[in-house]
Length: 169
Image 1: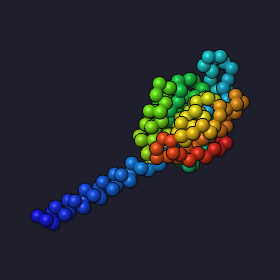
Image 2: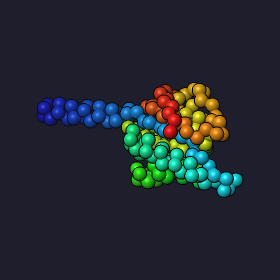
Image 3: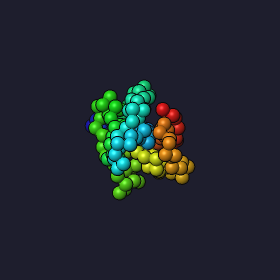
Image 4: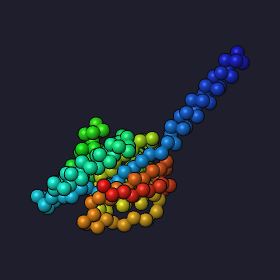
């Protein structure tokens, strides 16, 4: 009886250690501003030819370096079209996000996609906003309206404690 109890205790301890290890794997949140927007609609434009090419190059960059488990986009054509090539490649649905609870949203990205990557496509103000939120400090300012090629790669296990790498794509 003691052997059975001892064996069960060891099994519970090992499974608990494995579960805890999986929970603490870093999440990578990749934040980008939408690609170059067209002038076809002042309220909800699509992408220019350059923007479409940039969306493809984003997919190529992510394909090489990340396992994208989720993609979030604001509900605008330009953000959704920027995310689409990556979504198609990774066979992931594009989820819309809003700003009713940005802290809760950021926490859900970290918790729900531990060990993987989340692509978040936003705007010149929302991209640095979420980067700062994940980092836990006000470090990055609103992007210039002419800036389309910044990618913020945020690695973290909890909101407020992160590392940020910035690349151009």
